Image (tube, rainbow, N blue to C red; front, top):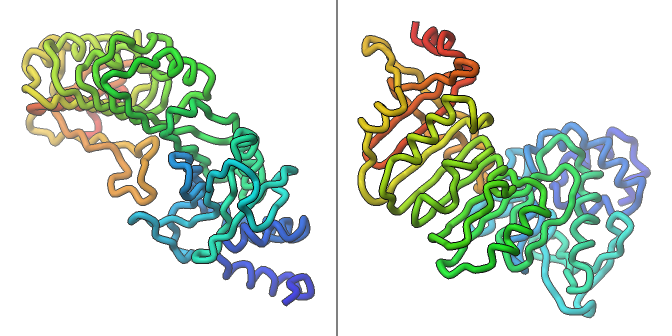
Length: 366
């Protein structure tokens, strides 16, 4: 079938019924075909919420589109993904079936005949130049209406490419004997500010610098042995943070964190923080007294604080919002009278900032 011989309305109908992976492959036929796909599928592409580059493994899916109602999904490891491209690593160029011109760079490919998508062959000699070429091609085809997320977890590479319109996310695990903090700091300083970081870390004698770009991430999820590393309660500059800590000796850091927020001296962008202590209870009354908590009238029902998560690792998140905070206790920021709700349970303190002044906040319960 020669598609170009049909009227545009027929061409569009045919393309409308093709999967994203099929459209992606078809776009390489010619410049005119790519132009036709972009024109006819513009509205459909604008319905894509995000595209993710998964660089966590050497031989695995590389480019994914989250699940959607209008496509046939492929299931990988229990997750519903639309795969545009996989990757496989080879030491030389002998193992490929065909080549494609991807944004001016000739790349080697195999074909996944089971699911019908291409597999790019990554060679040691040119890995750093491959990713920008792939992204530029996909960005030109699908447009800029969706989010582009780069997911990484291989710290051995210490490499993040410079890509336009991409948010970067990383999942890290630092061993108890981790001693490569100098290279890790260099990695963060030379990378774009991360959208999302998940870190599993033990206590280390090499803390992050207070000025580290690690603390500038929009969202951080930390599981750490002791509350002193990393020092999120002192240096975090982002929007959302979740911390699980095995043990600690004092409530002073939590009290200091809230009081610095109240003064307007720090945490200007913060929307949500959850701190969970795995061993031992939090000193609820001490914390509430020392931060000068105020309280909603017991005759009124407190509002629920919950926000969309900055980023969720799962393609179909079961909990797309932050955990709800329903509490009578709150504090007020001196600089603008904005309110933050505080909920202290046996082992958890939750802190949620409202985009409302105290007067506006109290009217929610009228």
